Structures are given as structure tokens and as C-alpha cells.
Length: 340
Image (cartoon, rainbow, N blue to C red; front, side):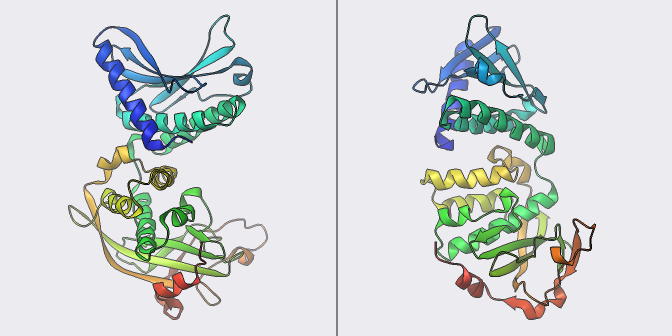
């Protein structure tokens, strides 16, 4: 699979070249990229307006099997058929300059997966799936970025990631174990060990919300831990979300493209885009305190087996002030994590 950073640079350079050569000339201007690939990818720009686009060629018979996104916040998709051609052109076009950063990331992701597909059929379905992914992303997050709760939760997960890196865990291994972005029941899974992260910025820091009954349910693992971190959030003070991400990039090794790409991929699943980091640079976080808990018998929680017939899900709030006897040290947590 092409590296994200390589794909991003090639696309960015191509769009800049098209813009430079087209100047103010009206019409649509384009050029093919990744010419050494059997699959056609073309970057374009339309004047006046300077809105960019990206086109993919796929076989007509394959295109008929899938329903492509037609329009979303910030971009639209058109499927164009040319008479006498066995291919159709799927054009993905930016529709609003406010979504330019998002579109750049979308383009990099879609091209990377399209080129890496093992067959033309897989490339077509991958194109359809990735565009649908970005439609959902744009509708949920768009140019506004992450909500306050999402920012805070991500900061907490990154703090735990940093603790693992400082404890000399292999960066690639722990990034693969970061399951929160993949909507797993717990944020980190290390085989028989799982860790759920809870982050609070409220004036009642020991109060945390459990959003589903499986988060603190240890079914299927030998050891389940809760990492709770209380933060102070202030404008112009403390480490910002982009600050922490930059520090982690240094720790995992900026020169290691496979690790860096996986890190950015996990962040994108959580709807954090590097191109939108300016949205998060005003407010910083300072740690007030943190605690680790062993989630076991007697810990204040609701698990799936506690639900009465007809109750399929529950969201609840717990006071960790009553869980002092379950506190453990970080060394105890990492001693349970199996070697990769």
C-alpha cells in the first residue's frame, strides 16, 4: 500500500502544478498522477473559482454494481459515462473552499486505498466504501472539527499512549492495540488485557460517564483496567491537542512511515485531521491527577449480564471516589500486558 505521506505530497504537488500552469484560464484543467499504475487517477481544477477535483476510472460493468455517494458537505461525486468507452469516470469534486483541508485528506485516503487494491473489482468497491466513509465523516464533523468531549477523550487516550511509549513499548505494536478509534468495547486491547480510558475536565473529576455496558465488562479478557485522568482546560495555557500529537510523532519516529501512517489513520478514525489542527490550538490541557483501577468484582459498574430482559443497552455515571480499594499503579498494569 502506498505510504500516506507520499500520496499526499504527490497529489499536493500535482494540484499546485495544474494551478500554476492554468493561471486564470477558464475551464477545467487536469493531469494524470501515478502514471506507473495501471489505474487511472487524475487531479483537476476548474476556473473560475479554483475548486479542485479528483477522477478515477473504473470498468462500467463494475460501476453498475455499486451506488456511489452523490453529494455531501463539502464535496460531490459524479459518475460520468463516455460513449464507446468500457470505463466510467468517478469524479470527486470540492464544492466549498471551507472544506479544502478535509478534501485534501479525503483525496489522500481514497487514492491510497484505490491504488493498493488487489484487483479492479476490489478497487471499485474500495472507492465506493471510502467515499461513503468520508460522507459520514463530513456530515458528522466537517469543517467544525471535533466536539469538546471528543477532543478531551482523544487527549486522554493519547496520554495513555504516551505512557506506553515512555515505558519502551514498541510503537507499531501499541498503535495496533489502540482500538478506541475502531469502536471496540475498550480503548486498548493487548490480547488478554484491556484498558478503558476515561478523561474528565469537570469540577467533579471523580464522576465519569460509561457510555455502554461493555466498556467495563471484562468478558473475554483476563485483566481489565480503567485509566482515569482529570484535566484542567484553559485558553492559552497547557499542552494543546496538536502539541501532544507532535510530541508523540517524535516518540514513534517521524522517519518510520509505516508507524506514522498508522498513527494518522487511527486519528482520522476519531475524526482528527492534521489539516484542521488550527481548530485546537487555542485551548491547552494540564493534568490535575490520574489513577489506574483494576476493574473486578466489587468495582462500581453495570455489565451486560445485569440488564433485565428487554433492556438492550444502558448509559450510566459512576463515582470513582468509592473505588479507592481498586486502585493500582501503572507498573502493575504494564506487568500484565503480554509481550508482543
